[in-house]
Length: 92
Image (cartoon, rainbow, N blue to C red; front, side, top):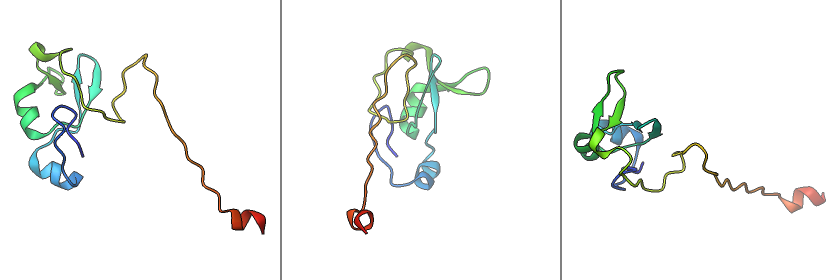
């Protein structure tokens, strides 16, 4: 897993959970994540609904690392599909 804020990596989901990573949070109404424990502690807070969100002073100001699961409404998403064929099986 890669923190979308600082880019630090962890080897597994279990390790991230043990280290206190946050799986997702909101920047205004846009869902992002995951965030490492250091970024979470410094930049996130719990909102009135119990959801983690970027602290007000940082909302709309953070540039996130590349994350294939980070979707911004209205933006295009490039998806690559690779189809592999086994020619030996096709020719027989």
